[in-house]
Every structure is written in C-alpha cells, then in structure tokens.
Length: 216
View 1 (cartoon, rainbow, N blue to C red):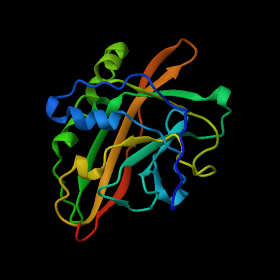
View 2: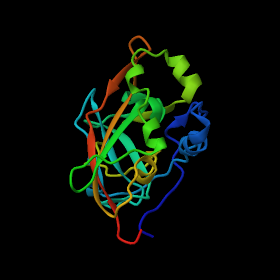
View 3: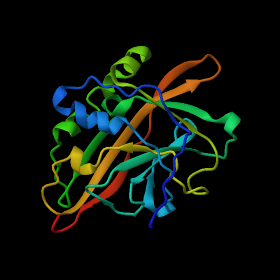
C-alpha cells in the first residue's frame, strides 16, 4: 500500500449540520461528515503557507503524491512554527468551507477556470466571518476544532489528523485534461487563552498544482 490510514482522535467535530441551498446540501454534508485519518506523506507532498500567529498550513492531496489529481480530495493540517508540547497547543476552530475557504484556479494558459456550484459556495460568506457571532456560525454551518502542537511539518512530515476538503473537480469545471494551478486561502478562529475569546485570522494563500490526466 502506498499509504496507511488509521483513526486519529485529535480533532473533534462540534457540529456537522449545514443549512446550505438544498441543491448542494448533500455534497457539503458529505464533506462535513469527516472521518479523520493519519496519512503518511513526505514533505514534498504538501505545500506550506507562510506562518502567521505562530502556525502555518500544510495542504496536499489524499494520495500523498506531489502532484494532486483532479478527482482526489484535498486535505490540510495546521502546524506550529516551533515545537510545542501538548500543554502549549494552539487551539483553532475551522468554520466550514462556506466561511473558511476561498479558492481560485487557472489553467496552463493562465486563464481563470469557472467554478462549479459547489465552488461558488466555498468562501461565499468569508467576508462576513469577522463580524459574525460565533454561536450563530456554529448553529448555521458547524465547526471543526483542531490543535497545533508537536513538531513543525518539516520535522514531522505526517498529515495525521488532517481535515479533508472537497476535490478540485468538485470545485471547478476542469473540462480539459492538463495542468492547473489552484490557490487556496483559509481563515479560522484562534482561541485566546488569556480571556477565552476567539479571534478570526487568515492564513497566507497556498498554491498547489493539480492535474487532470489524459483520458479522464
């Protein structure tokens, strides 16, 4: 087997319901009912964001290969900039793709690729997150709690506990085989332990290579 999966209990789903438009409700619900696996990948199999708030993102494909295929799920995990003990862990909350993820894609000629209906939903409320009431967000779309601790990605290149995102082919109309460039921007809440409040922050965008092979 090229990769090994096992249950990984670190993150916890607080709520997995969604009130999206009924035409995409089923797809988003499937994306939100997430089974978390430990996926062993090499450092070359994920792209990293620049650091912010002491953490950064690693984004890759479900297969663990350096180039992501158009029909495989994306996944991301948050890592600390420096090694942290579990008692020092950074507590984060991802507010679902509607609020938490913005995406865009270009083909090999640099032309913008049209989003699918599901792709249009991603990030459709991203601008509202900073003003939104946290409890209302929980009630509306659900949240995903996660923690950043342990060693940085370059030292511990294990994507165990990563959260799955939709497939590129679910987000974009990748009608023609070829190479594509996908830009992903993620925002989430960070828990401030000093006063137990949550602050919204945005990771710098991450660019990944996606391919639709000939004949597919």
